[in-house]
Amino acid sequence: MTPRPTRTRILDAAHELMRSEGLLRTTTKEIAKAAGCSEAALYKHFASKEDLFIGVLSERLPRLGATLERLRGDPGAGTVEENLAEVARHAAVFYAETFPIAASLFADRRLKDRHERAMRERGVGPHVPISRLDAYLRAEQETGRVRADADTYSAAALLMGACAHRAFAYGAVDGPPVPLEDFAATLARTVLDGIG
Image (cartoon, rainbow, N blue to C red; front, side, top):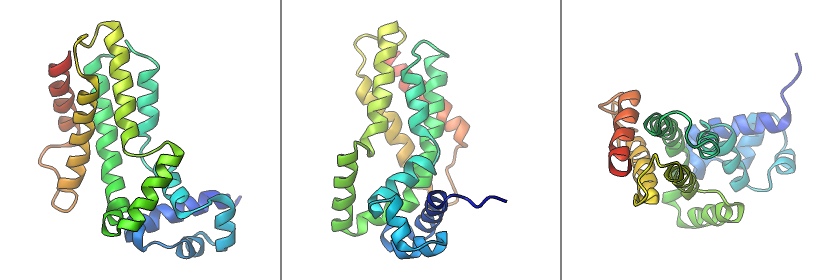
């Protein structure tokens, strides 16, 4: 059996530790130990803890970005409602997985500032899915499937915000009162009613 590459082991260990301990409490030393490598080897693959966090978000969590890029590149495919429901499903799962990792950022202002700076420098962050969904909706506007006077940015922010809030509001209780499929379909229909 071929051993997994070091970078893969590091990302897997970082994902697991960040999920269980949160970003604030997870150290690169612990990640390296769990990955079976030295801390120096970790830094050969990732320049900082922020790079590791971004790697976990982009490579170990549900691929929200890929879904949004695919839709933006192919306006007119499927129905807008089906496409928005797909985005809502992926976003709800993405945010549900992200919250336990990132919640500790809000406990330490310096850590939060450092992470925000690192994300800005790399062109990533929580604004990106909203911008990508907005770009998709503007492309659909050009096809005539979204009203010409619709505020696509606000629609994108509402959909993503509802998905993030679902993860936040129900993460610590028995779970959301509505199954994911129903939530996504109803949310898509509601947003589309406003812009379609």
